[in-house]
Image (cartoon, rainbow, N blue to C red; front, side):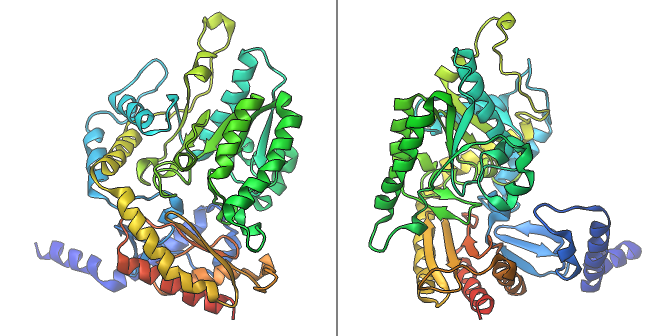
Length: 466
C-alpha cells in the first residue's frame, strides 16, 4: 500500500513530468519526422510534448497550459476531451470498431449519411467516404472526370482553380492548388490546371467594397469558362476563405456567379469546404451564404469534432446515376480506402452533429465572432498591420513591412515565427501563416479566453515588427 502511494506521489511531482518531457523530446527527435516542419529548426526551437487536453486548453508535461487558438490545425470544434463526443466513441467501441465498406455496411455510416444530406445544401444526394481532406479532393476530382467519361465526353480532362488556392498535399489535390511553397518542388509530377485570378478582397481598390471587387474579378473566370469549358471537368474553389493561402477572403457574390456560369458552360463545381465547413464562416456550410449547391462538396476536419480522421464527398443523384450500370460496362467508381466510413470516426461525427442539433452553436458563434471583431479592431491602427479581416469565426491579421504600400516582409525574416514563440511563452498556441496571424478557435472558447488570445497576438505582433 505504501509503495503504491509513493509511486503515485512520485508521478505527480513536477520534476517527474519535467524529466518525462525531456525524455519524450529526445525519443521523438530520434524517430519522428514532423509534418510541415524543417526538422533542423528543432535544434533551437523546442518541441512541446502535450500530456492532455481539456476544452480549449492543452497541457504539457511541465503543467503549462496553452490556449489552442488554431483548433489543432482547424479540426477541433467543441474542445479537447469533450464528454459528449467521448461518450459516443466509447459506446461505439464496444459494438464495432471497423468493417470494410465494400459489400458491408453499419448503422453509424448510414445514419451519418442521412443526417449530412439533410443538413447540406439541397440537391446533394449521395455520400462517398474517405480518410482525410486531401483524399476527399482526390475523390471529387476523379469522380468529376469519370462522370464526363461515362456520359461520352472523355475530352473533358482539365480543372480550373483559383490563384492562391490550397486543396491538400496528395498529388491530385496539390496540383489543383496554387500555393507555391507547397507545390513548386513537385511541379514535374503534377497535372496542369487552368488558374484564374482570385477574388481575394485584400487586393481591392481604395473605396471598393469586397462584394464589388469579387464581382469584378469574376470576369476572368467567365472568360476562362468560355474558352476552356469544352475540355474542363470542374472548377474547384474554397468557398469564402482561402485558408492555407494566408486566410484571404472573398464575398459570397462570387460563388453565386460561379454556380450560374458552371451550369451555363456545362462544368462541375467542386466546393472544398474541408476547412470552412461546420460553422467556421458563420453558417453551417459556406455555400449557404450564396444560396448555392455545388456538384461536389468535400468535408473533413470539423466533421468528427477533431477526434478521428474522416472525410466525405457529397454529390448529386445525377452524378451517381452516371456510374450506375451493369458491371460489364466498367462504369463503376473503383476507388477505395481501407478505413472508409470507419464506425468509430462516424460515431464521433454523429456526436458532433448532436451538439449542433442540441445547442445553439451558430448563435453563440455569432456572439463570439462579434467579440473577436471588436477586440481585434484596434490592431487595424498598428503601424505594421495592413488589414484585419474576418469571416465568421476566422479572423486574420496581415503584418506588413510598410503599411502605406502594403509591402510585405521578406519571407526569410519569419516574422510569424516570432509571434508563435512569444505566444507559447504566454500560454497561447498561434501558428501564423507566413506574415499572417490568425484565430480559428474551438467554439467553446469563453469571452475571457478570446480576450487573452487577442491580447497575446497583439503583443507578439509588436515584438515581431519591432
